[in-house]
Amino acid sequence: MRRGQWGHRLEDLYGISRSGIIRTAELRHWGVSNSAIDARCRPGGPWQRILPGVVMLGNGHPTARQRAVAAIVLSGDNAVLSGRAALHEYGHGTSYSGDAHVLIATHRRVQSTGFVLVERTTRMPAPVMRNGLPCAPLPRALLDAARRCRTLDSTRSLIAEVIQRGGARVPELIAELDAGSGRGAALPRAVLREVSADVHSVSEAEARRLWTRSGLPRMVFNRRIVDADGQFIAMPDGWIDEVAFAWDIDSLDWHLAPKAYKSTVERRTRMQNHGIIVLPTLPSAVRDHPDRVIDDLRSHYQLASSRPRPEVRMQTAAG
Image (cartoon, rainbow, N blue to C red; front, side):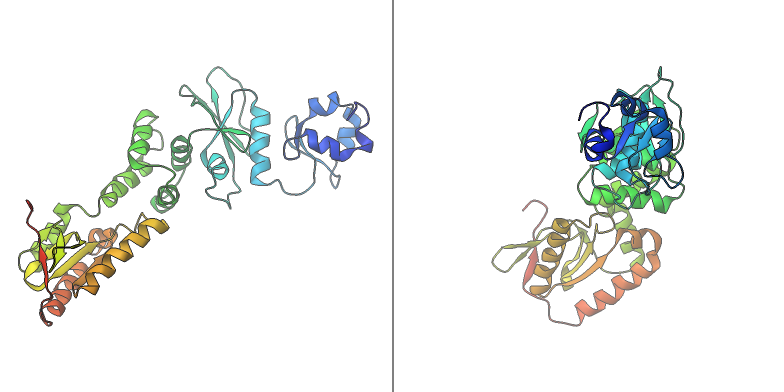
């Protein structure tokens, strides 16, 4: 498009923009006068000023993508998208419609305005390009968003989505949280402590404590169970050998990815196919409803005791 011909080729002007977002200075460069910009950005006009010096070539509500682009356009070179806006570019939180969080170096003088939250930081991350936008690495973006959550449930939901979908691992999230500011870190730190326990199923100490209170016969933990031919069946978290009763502490509070869920279902099915009585328990139930879990342990033990013991055996720790 030649300068000054924008009025005849509006589609070319949109093509010069980024998702319909463009600086007023760039519009002037292509021959759009200040008066023309003002006229088109009047209430009810075809364009709108969505940030200082930034125009959206449309009059609808800006999408999450357009807000993110506008935030980067406003913040200039070397700005990095973070928080929920960056998570959206990574494919998380697709219904997000809040502020666009950008990181800039401490010497920059860009101010928060409108829907743009500007944070100055001494820890500028190396940008990861997502859909043409410079984004903070996923662990940083996730924790920047988590620091601004107001409740434990919202923090848990935010972090769980990314972990469940394999976007980040707990150790790297803990390392990122430790490296950053302590401001707003209490809730994400509590959630990461919680998920750290769930990643390895419920801790053996918690399980042993409930089993001790139950009054049931000896239970062993993390032993391989094999069939009559010595073929591996499963390794349940808890096992009462005299009645072939398995206690399976799910990690489904946090790991709902299809592959992990499929593995859990297949393991449990193998045990049940061999006649093993299986009690599945969520880590949150062990933590929040211990008395109910003890009742479940006792009732499933009685069920296991009421049927002939199947031909399965426990391998010793050495074998």
